[in-house]
Length: 154
Ligand code: 4NP
Image (cartoon, rainbow, N blue to C red; front, side):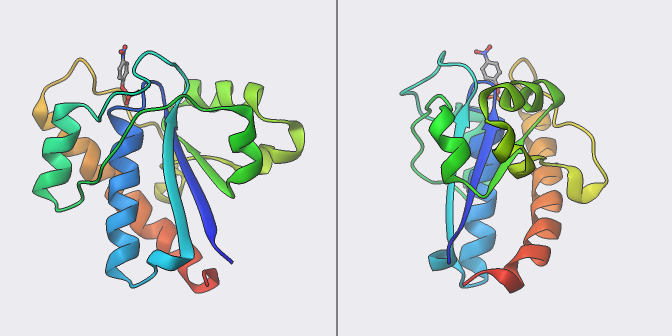
């Protein structure tokens, strides 16, 4: 059975597409592409239809993790579809708790939980270097998470 993963941030142009690109690359590197469905979405509709932020694309390209992304807003039906729904920060988490029915609340996670917790700060008003740091942080967390779930994939 496929493991369905959704990353959620505010705009769906910086952090969550970055996490999506990272996990896609990690999964492909382990030959597990068929075992995962990976997507991302934003709590706002501000950037719906847009590609990822150029700074996110730059970082993803540097790490050969670029993919075609079109931003979209998260919807209540996503709570049912996905097995893991990762929030970048506590505000994302709170809003997802409001969006998703109580029965789906166990699917909601903080993306840095595998590293002991914390938040991925919004890099939108920061420079390229912060985007690179965001990549490093997300990749570390997602490697740990993938080590845990990969044996159950397929
Ligand atoms: P993201 O970053 O939530 O990581 O995609 C942001 C992107 C856009 C805005 C805020 C955060 N914005 O205010 O438009």
